[in-house]
Image (tube, rainbow, N blue to C red):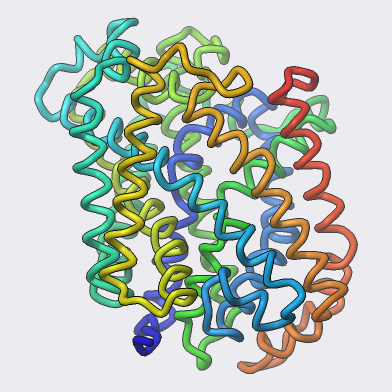
Length: 450
């Protein structure tokens, strides 16, 4: 087996893990949910959950990875053989997400190209996006460009690939986000959107707001995807887990908050204060925002910067998702990184092609009412993600015991929150994740709208 690589230091690890956490969910799902659930009220709940629930799950996964020096495929089994099945279940999550995430990454790449080429007006038309994804050939070209770029980063390895990419893209992403946020909030008429986004209204604090913030936090921080366990396995024993987790959390939350400042005021100005214009899912990024950029002064430049920013976020996340799978193949089958990367890329291309065809020549093919991409998204995000998270809490809380994780954290000094950690991991976190699981399924079934 190849010797396990490590990040060169805490900064490399934090930037890589933050790069994983800062993805498409931060840049389109977070603003949509914040707008839908009262802006400031949603932010308040999200931040409180981030520094409690999110922190506990993140340090748990990083500690499991560092303690075992293994990917999730083998990590759980190395701590307790009877629970090796959980490692396999955890690995299924990135396996399902990877192909369709790269397909969406291809769409982002296409739109970055559209903005650069100056065809913003065409992209702003109502049927442009639907026409594009319904084609047979063109979406696959952009998809292949994106997935090959992702695979190349993985082949270069932890230091020369993942860490080097993160050291360049994450600071650039932060600078772009800050610059675009400042530009948007200083536009005429943006003040109403900023006020709505940042000022909490007590009447918006309700169960739906709580569940929406909890679910978004879970996805936003790359929890239960095997990613933090994998990256934790590359993390030096000399570094502080809890401090690093806090820094990842701050970076991820800051980007999400700034994304809202970029998008919500801009759409408010464009739509005359209609928050429904923020639309859920791809319609916000690929339909609404091109219209905003088309009507905005210096819209082409802003559009270029925005889609380059989203592309940076998408590639750092796709790299982390692919790495979680590749590391599992390497650990399980004792193969080389290059071989594992080629196998995973080939799988991703095959399933990604099927996802793309689901919007075109296979559009009549449905799985329990879903097209192929939406089905994979439902199974991975609405079922497996919270299920793996809940089982991980039960595993740590009652099988290997919280002391196993606390001891790993305390290799670098006292963990002052161990009492709080034990309470959260055993009782509060699994209960909260159960609520995510139930609400996600009810939302998809149309019984509860979140």
